[in-house]
Length: 478
Image (cartoon, rainbow, N blue to C red; front, side, top):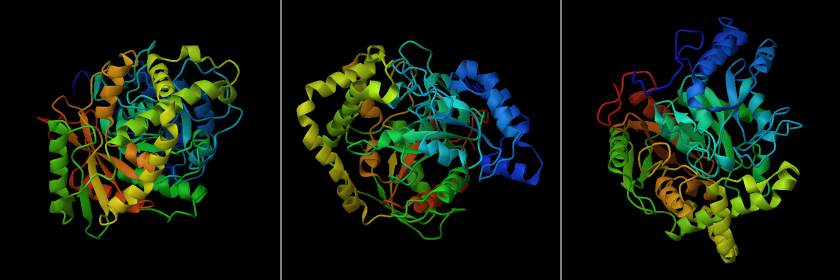
């Protein structure tokens, strides 16, 4: 193992099990919920000083909860919730010093759906300020590190959750996605990250007032079956009857699919290592009998500016309604430079708002038309390999940072504006020893297709994990 890796995998009751495996051990009585909680707490205490991924630890409460019987798909499995989602009795800071540490009066809507699956909650994980950045870095605090290499970004905005899962502290953790915030940290940390169809799960409070709802909740995991079981378990709590049920996907599908390929983003070509990972994934898919062909991009290059302007609109509105949303002690003067830069951008471009919103809403029909002859679409997750910490830090001058982000987070936002499902899978390794993710997207409501493809790729090329044999020259370890 490299000295730069940080992980907690060891010979305890958690072992290398995924969440489904741990839940089965609890059901059989081979291990207790308390034993799992204690092991996860010990792992967290061993590595988080270096990772800086936990915002609010509640280890004593977790022990109390683990002593009580629980029910659900993941009964007794330790987990975390991202700190932009309310948990009764805990503050929700959204990664920002501007938000007062006021305890939430009740669980958020998605928190209820999440905890109904029986998780033992260990605390809340870090995110960059309001989830606006694609790297979990802070202006006045230490960043959250990537378990694969402590000097590199773990992605964002669900970076704290991804670091906890990739490092082996827990097998599954809550994440959410407004422009790639599940898929980007999954790609950086070598995890499975599914962004579901819009409103597949109960609607998060943050999404209810958005003029274009780009937001969805989900999880990051180390196995496809954990993600599949989570989706099925969530449907047992509440299901959107306007969408086809996903049900429990247990393995690869039998149908051979037609898959569209998009190599280049609207902001340019992927880096050579990312393109090589795409090409190897295409070869794997074709070797399994699927048909692939390059397809036209669903939207015009103007989409980039429209999405960044929407990003800026959200930052501007956070400052405007923050006191109403977060309480009278909310202080926008505490915003980091990136949030402030976004808000300033919107002020200068406010006149674009009506047509920008109209164009973003139209991406739904544009995507439907573009994908109609395909069963799925394969793209990179990111424009280039995971950068070192500091490259995307909030203290980088705003115009320079936004330019970097437009080239980096170049593939994921479209699925947020059009509401379609997309999944990030770890299909390559960089020369620096960090994962490279690819993205599979599908038609609205077609999560089953994505999970079946993900199972198939996982079987033919099992995901690497931190602490195993290192990759060499960009190839996955065998």
